Image 1 (tube, helix red, strand yellow):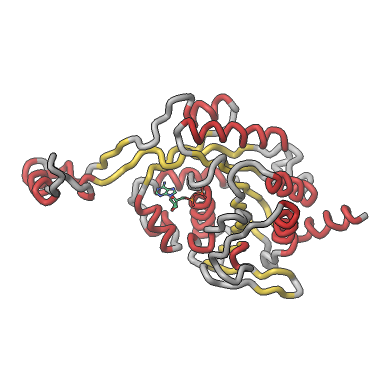
Image 2 (cartoon, rainbow, N blue to C red):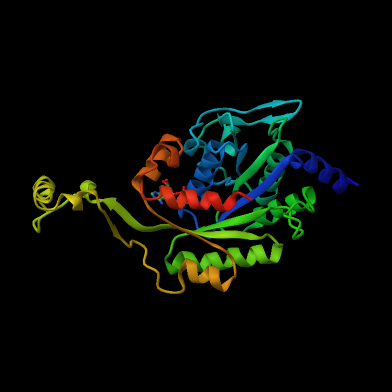
Length: 311
Ligand code: ADP
């Protein structure tokens, strides 16, 4: 009976959420929170109502990236009230509940699971519900992931495209291209298979560094700066080069690479996001990257990723 009651509370909290998208990564630092936040920002600026739920309890970076750092949440009769980054984007994160924003969270499994469940059951996403709930999960596959999927399955037994039985509409797996990160991606994909969560696609992040030639810095062999000279020379001899983009692979792929991996696992490949200083800047500012830096190299690939989520 207790389980049934729990399931019905969950059903309530999530019954007005059309799509739940889990964002997964095998390792930390590959851009999972960046992708979660920017997808949420972009969907919200396209007019969808979006919830961004940060359950990366050990390293909550979402509030900074969504521009709502230092805010607190309040509990009302309807549940926890999220913080609004804009009228269409509601954010809920563990760090809103911590007194010191940077206090390390060292909690054991049961307490973490309790909190995750509270987030899923007791966040009041508003009377009109949500078109999308984007869930930024911890890196790897852990107890927390199993709990999240289990809770969602209890709450939303048949809600997914009518095609399967998973409570999560699907998962996006973020990886960098090198083999070290890819090895962990296999585990994520197997986790999705085992738990019946459809993989919406793999995002290859930090794939190559792209810079406008006019933004490059040039050095002589003795390391002295000659940027001004080179730019002047280019302007005189071949000005069209200044507006070109230069690129280099930072994390080289040795094995299958993310695209080959997507083929092997028969899931969509959502494309490459290059290393882009404006993407980092938007995350530092807490702003929407595609809106504020539409000409930047990662903007068009990010827009395509968001397009693929319009279900
Ligand atoms: P994770 O959530 O996987 O731990 P983050 O999203 O926090 O990783 O990313 C780690 C750092 O790298 C952040 O400072 C983020 O802004 C930056 N970053 C992520 N992806 C890119 C990118 N494509 N270009 C530039 N910086 C990026």
